[in-house]
Amino acid sequence: MTTRVLDVRPDDGSAIVRLHVRCGEQRHEYVTLSYCWGGLQNTTTTTENIETRIRDIPMDYLQQTIWDAVTIASVSRNAILMDQCFVITQDNAADKVVQIEAMGKIYKNSTITIPAGSAPSSKGVLVDPYYRLS
Image (tube, rainbow, N blue to C red; front, side, top):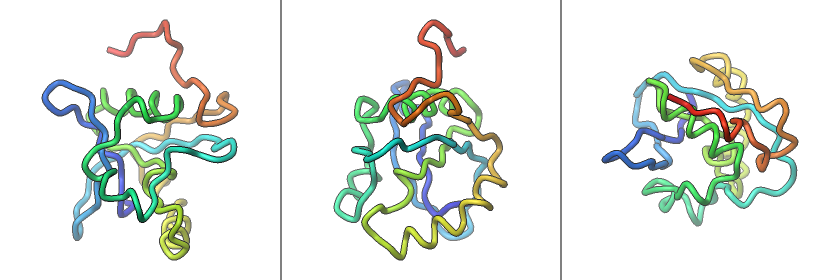
């Protein structure tokens, strides 16, 4: 498992997303998201904002593809999402190398992978707005 994941478990009935940093040998089933970045992302984790991401990530800050994946993961029993733009510290070359080298194993060991095959970028829609998740 990656050293960081998005914890998307509802807190007090409201949707909340936060970056979770794994402690020691901590293990949990998780969901991965496979999508096309489609250029620059405004929703990345950096050394400057990682502490803020650990406290919370506002839902309205997420690109549509990631928002949809969070919605899907939050109704699953896993409620943990591995998404590259948040779990890799984008301005830290050493962290990128470690995390990217682990990607094959991370995807292989996920409980489920959400494929965003039809979305041309992270701004694309995964879930039809008329389909209701229950």
